[in-house]
View 1 (cartoon, helix red, strand yellow):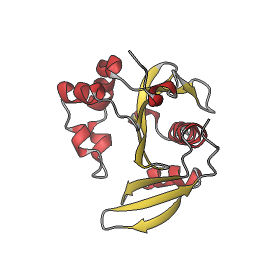
View 2 (spheres, rainbow, N blue to C red):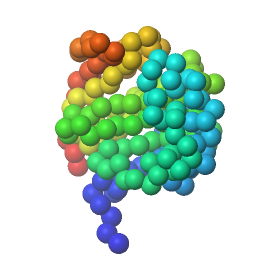
View 3 (cartoon, rainbow, N blue to C red):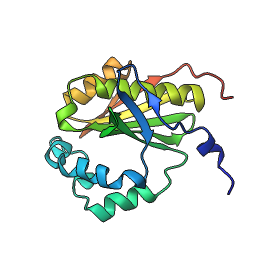
View 4 (cartoon, helix red, strand yellow):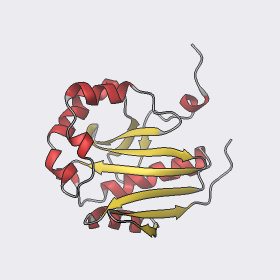
Length: 176
């Protein structure tokens, strides 16, 4: 079976600047761990009105999502010493423009993990995919998520009724 151009560029595991914190491609092989992560974070995922659909997922829905190929986007698990503690996605909106989405287990917030995981994936997108722009939306009231984006160099691009759109221009390296 031929490997797609996208698959050849996907990492087996991507290190972050935080020791023990890595990213992996999130596939159906981690469905049990992913559903347990969702299940124990239902209140956390919906406290600002975002991630309602994810928080309402049952096992079959969560597993089915992981069976779908996200190409040309990238869906990653955030691993802390090998245990799944979150998710970060780089979504191909209009390449080389991408969108960033992320969430962590409530028990692991406030330790710099979201910032480190997002930074690693943004750098991957810039150097491997030639991303030039990354956007992210933050529901009003979710100041901690906005702070992550500010630390990553994002700026407010537009304010909407229920969320704020952030933008970061990247200096993309040529795609090999």
